[in-house]
Image (cartoon, rainbow, N blue to C red):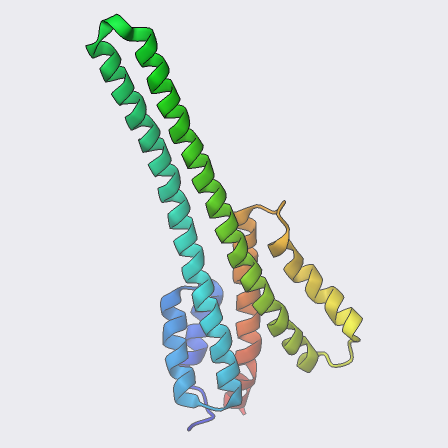
Length: 199
């Protein structure tokens, strides 16, 4: 196995740092497998986790949008059926209106529960990604700045990772921070390989 990275590794890293995509990470892992060795394996592990993070973020965002649209359409459908029935049977207007209102409220309640379930699910993903990144950043810091005490290292990493776990931080901010942390971790893991190439 070759210890020298392919030129495509640097090109892939440049693209990932500019605008990361699962496809670029997929291609990067092929080059890292070709290279072999411990530094390439470490970089590949970060690339794999980053790939999963991007796919999860995309999936969760699509799921949330679909859930919200589904709730709106469901509520509109229930309301329109209620109005059609009310117009068809003029004699029981008040009763029909109440029935359609109850059905619409139930639909809205269901959509709220769906949104809450989404929040729990995405919260678990943030927790999993933060767990992984905490360990990865710890190892990178331990080798790059060995003079830090464990307390200093912990304080620095806490500052970086804590917003991902904070329920008050908006989802889009958490997602952006996750991406930036993964970019930094991947660049740190690829640095020894790229440095070896320039020697």
